[in-house]
Image 1 (spheres, rainbow, N blue to C red):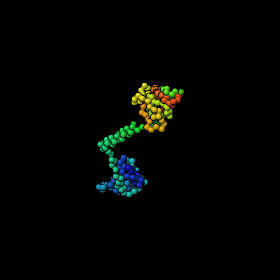
Image 2: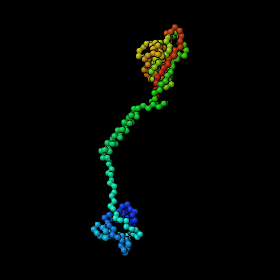
Image 3: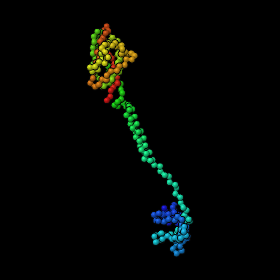
Image 4: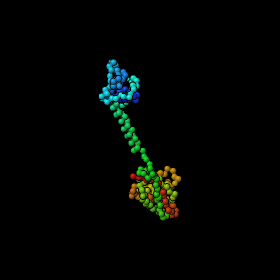
Length: 229
């Protein structure tokens, strides 16, 4: 809002000063009062008005700047606020999206080297260390240093029978009987196995018999996945 000084000096942006209680809308300049040298104004009804200089208004040194046009304020654009129902629907949709993202994060495995839950391969060997005489049998015991689940056996020995394979005290064979070692040859087809997991402290036992004509050392490679807690 402009003061009277701004209005008469031409430095104005509005025809009124609400804080001072002055409103020049609809008034017309009538000239200066020769006695007081203050401006006079006609209102719309033709009444002559003079600002009250006793209230602290001093117009000395100011020239009339012309009739003050009625300024138009730019139209206000109403703010579109969502209704309570729309707000609820938006919040519900955001909550559903958040829950779906959490469910996806929980079901999608993240594989980081060395992290818990990562799948890693490992192996160990059944090695008789010494030769097994022809016709003799031996049991080889191994205690793996980490939990694992065996899924493949491999041996190049061809003169041995695999009599039994135990994890702890439980045989991994479905029935009593010996298998030829050739069944687990490196180039054998579909020789994968599904054995019970070897947990911490468990011992894996392999019993073999040399059916060859001469003494031989037995060696078998065992492969599987590490079980991480």
